[in-house]
Amino acid sequence: MHDILLDCRGMACPQPVITTREALEKKPSSVTVLVDNAPASENVRRLLEKSGYASGLAVEQREDSLWAVRGAASCAVCAEAEAVIEAAGERASRTLVFLSTDTLGHGSDELGAKLMANFLATLPELGANLWRIVMVNGGVRLASQPGRSLDALKKLEQNGVSLLVCGTCLEHYGLLDAKQVGETTNMLDIVTSLDLADKIIRP
Amino acid sequence: MLEQILADIPVPPDPEGRIVHGFSNNEDAVLVKSPPAGMVLVQTVDILGAIGNNARLFGQTTAANALSDVYAMGGIPWSVMNVAAFPSPEKPEDAPLSVLADILRGAMEKVAEAGAVLAGGHTLDDEFIKFGLAVTGAVDPAEAARNDALAPGDCLILTKPLGTGILATAIKARWPGFEEAEAELYRWTTRLNAHGAEVIRAMKLKAATDITGFGLAGHVLEMARGSGVSVELDSCSLPFMEQAEELASFGLIPAGTYRNREHCSCRTTVSESAEELRALLAFDAQTSGGLLLAVPQERVQEACERLGALGEAAHIVGRVLPLRGRQEQLVIT
Image (cartoon, rainbow over all chains, first blue to last red; front, side):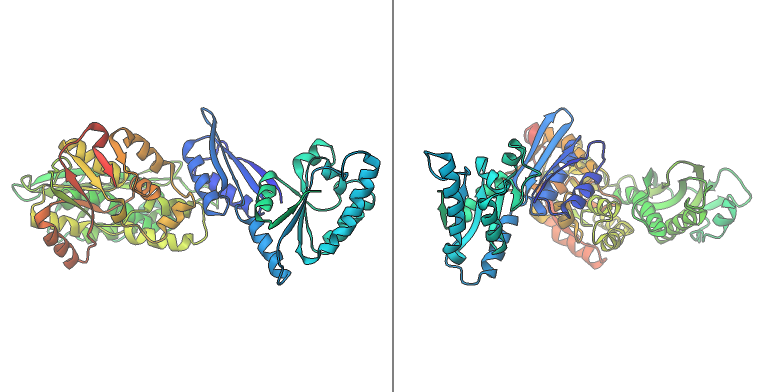
């Protein structure tokens, strides 16, 4: 899962389409293509739409001769979710756990950190229903800082639970390189996951 | 070297002796017999950059493309002159002169098929390969079809599908399936519009044109302006070459096609019901496209039957309306 930026300025048609198509072979989660003429912007838009990057598809003219064409993999997350469901056989429902801090409850952060570790260590009790854990804001520390919480997350991942870690948040806290579990993701995947889930737990 | 190559290429036959004094002894100009009394000359020149990767079929395409201007007026090709630009081969990776020979061979095959004779030509050293022909045809001036003689009530019949701009772009991009696209492209571009011209003469049609660089919609708008009428094109009825729509949906659309649409935009209305891509492809720049025949409503069936009997396609793509507002000189539904 990654985003890519392609600079196709100075290229005549059909080169921007060829360059974008080659980049899509790496299956990025989203792509932004810069072009310097209107026909190229329309052609790249058509390619993205046709190639399954129709989610949030937009052509934005930024300057007289600068267009940004953006699109995200519309079905990557759904397809992945379907595959998980299939692998799990008769999964009753999809439960998603949404973690926006690294502590549980208010009062004492020290206590909150312990409770969070216990919470994560107990999640396997949900069984096959536990589908995905999404970590945002302070929650991304759980995926990056050594400790019982990280160990619990690693175990969950090994058991086939999908872990999504917000890339913007990792960047904000300077933890991009420190992340040890889960996939770095974007808001589109997060929103799609929330939509796909049958039940959302927000401790 | 070049002379040797030219000498090996079969020259179109001249059974009537139209060439009175030829270029065999390095004469720089050629004496050509006039067409029969009462006929006038139709003159045209058309030169193309390389299209596709097959020299002989490119040669055939350029000849069919140049001859088409004569056919569009209902004319009969009389004589042609070749115009070739070719980079002198200096390095091993340069295109050898045999490529030029193949282009000429292909062109001469089509000139022979058209029944015209070769009245010479000119080759120059240039950076890129270009080839074309200056064509002289003959036509009875009272019966020549024109591009400014549309009348309200006429139906518009197209004799070849659209899509050469798309296919040529896919070939240039070496897009998956481009070999099939190339075969489909040449299948249509090498086809003479001779049968369409026959029908123009037989039915004494007043208005026709051939579809080339401005695309169907661009040429139709030219006709509408010249004739002081409006024209409606039905996007659902537009015929496309195999793969053309699919490749276009991937964005393999030449900049020229978008330019054509832009150029015509102030006189064009695209109705909301028209599919966006089809409406755009109405502007796809064509190489050696078909003829567009304007046929009075009551004679449409006759025209389709005549074209069919000659093995020619007949697609009814639109109709001529009385002049509407400037913004509605071309309406795509």
